[in-house]
Amino acid sequence: MPTTHQPDTIYPSHNTITMPQPTDGYFPITSVHRDDLEGLGYDTSNIDDGTMQELASKMADAYLDSDFWIDLPIIADHLEIPKKS
Image (cartoon, rainbow, N blue to C red; front, top):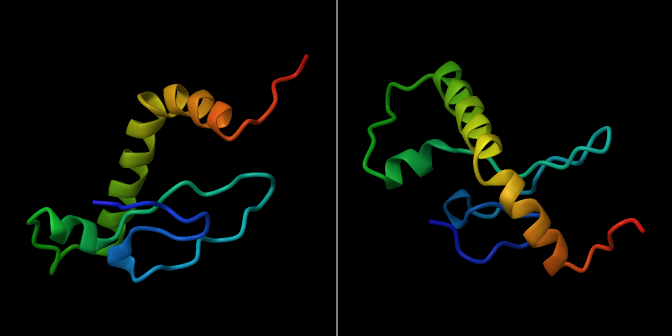
């Protein structure tokens, strides 16, 4: 499970890796790694990159469909990002 996040790092199981640079105004939120599955008890020894990509895509869809739009304004307010007048 993640601990406190730094702006340019991901979960500690990834040995602190740097996020890709934003392009076209989009900023990456997270990633998924085989270590994440292993940490939950899954055997990833035969999981190919295509399956991992599908998992990542479905995880992104699930987050966007649920908590993303709830969390975004809460965190924006916490960071004191001003709203338009």
